[in-house]
Length: 140
Figure 1: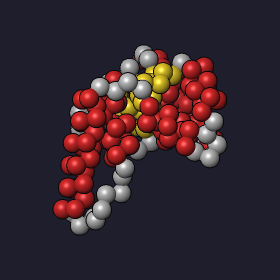
Figure 2: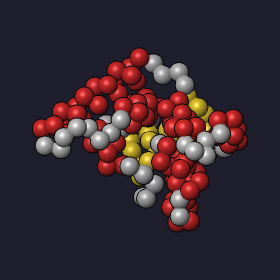
Figure 3: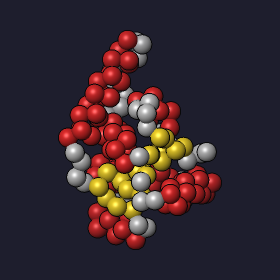
Figure 4: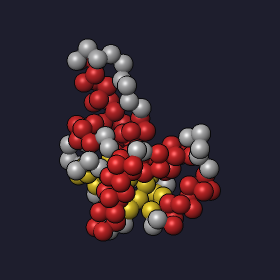
């Protein structure tokens, strides 16, 4: 099973043609390996966009065979919190100041760890925050 990051779906819809093609190819490769899912946070981020129409988004995901996984076990929430705290400590120690990421990114990563892999255009971040996560970079 493979999870999709929000940025991949936005790239598919709004990216320059070559970016959209990379996103589509990565999603198709993921689908060839099994089920494709998004966590509830990804769905909420899509709905929060100015063009976000919740029922249209849900219908498009369903039509593409993408499952919206809204029932996350306590372990996902715990792992997300621990990963975020570690990120915050790294930022502070490096002199980088306050965290520039939000907890939603860490929930997406923790969920992906539970399902098996994550397709993203932000691979470096997820590899660092979740070292054991199988990260699939859309640009690869």
